[in-house]
View 1 (tube, protein in one colour):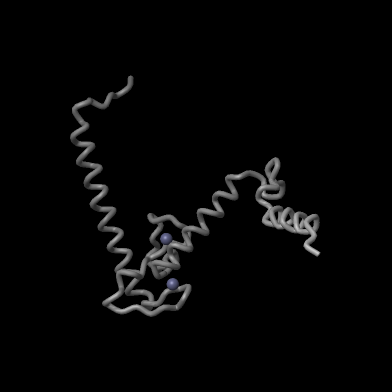
View 2 (cartoon, helix red, strand yellow):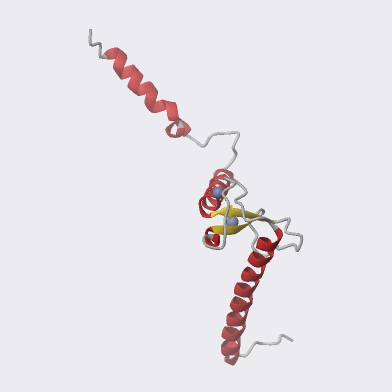
Length: 133
Ligand SMILES: [Zn+2]
Ligand SMILES: [Zn+2]
């Protein structure tokens, strides 16, 4: 015996989603406030200092990149300026790309295109053949 969800509940679902979104936004404001209370207003990377005027440029970064992981002791938070925060996420994305690209110990077939010296070698080789003297 399976209990079915009546289709008329979709309106309720919208409400639940809206409520969840609101509480999520609220939670984000909460952890930001907590983090700002807990830590000095300094970027953890470039040590830039912040004050009330430019505080909006200071972001609360999650060390494990899980925005739902907000331990009250602040151990998952790191205050970073916009630039360093951007950087941090870019590095994370690059790391993920490398992991997704397969076995890091074995280059994917024909990995020569990723060799930064491949082009240099060609340039040098061309220079040798083309003697100017
Ligand atoms: Zn910074
Ligand atoms: Zn972040």
